[in-house]
Amino acid sequence: VAREARSGFVVAIDGPAGAGKSSVSKTVALRAGLSLVDTGAIYRSVALLAQKQGVDLDDADKLAAIALALPIRFEMRGDVNHVLLDDAAFPTRDVTHDIRTPAISTASSQVSRHPPVRAALLDLQRRLGDDPRGALLEGRDIGTVVFPEAAVKIFLTASPEERARRRQRELAEKGAHMTLEAVLQEIGARDDADSTRDVAPLRAAPDATQVDTSGLELEDVVARILTLIDEARAKRLSAESSGNA
Ligand code: DC
Image (cartoon, rainbow, N blue to C red; front, side, top):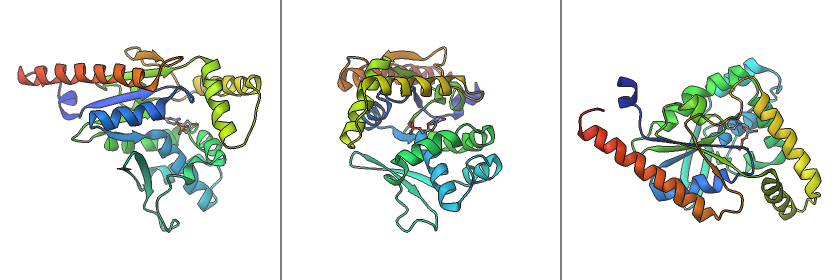
């Protein structure tokens, strides 16, 4: 169909926080030669600009206006995916670290609940995903909403215990100590909120390959996904050479 012929090669990786999405996505994108679009960083950038401009996190219209004009770019340097905002409010414009604070994590989740904000970001995400090299997009709703026609769809999960252990370790590295039980409870509450929200809830696409990363090494997960990418590329090439594309 015409729609498929126009779109580039897209890999969608979705899943909850703590499933290992960002390290898996970065490694796969680098090895497969795909551009990497961290859609969580897009929601985080909207939250950061809202904070700088003093916009209320309940003001869906103002937030949507920020989202619609978001001057964001990604640039992979070494193994760091830099997030750049072309905004006068930022002297350095490199917000890679500014968007990872706990305050921005919370704010980005609030921002992402508003349907007008999600709608405003759809076009941007589709443009960023339209790369001649092919693109890997990581997020919550890539395979279900942003690129339902993606060539490869992965839904990464891990048991709540494993995700809680990872999160507990991350927190400890920052000097914050929580019991495993408290972390488990926090993760459970966030899972509930994410999967029951009205718009684009966290959910695996029916045609996604589910990969449970509990007890798996990063290399094992990466290898599985690279195999799926190779298969999808081969299928696409043979479709093109037989004149179906
Ligand atoms: O993946 P992350 O933690 O950087 O995402 C930050 C927030 O953005 C997260 O709370 C959920 C939201 N988000 C979303 O709603 N849809 C996406 N495709 C990606 C992120």
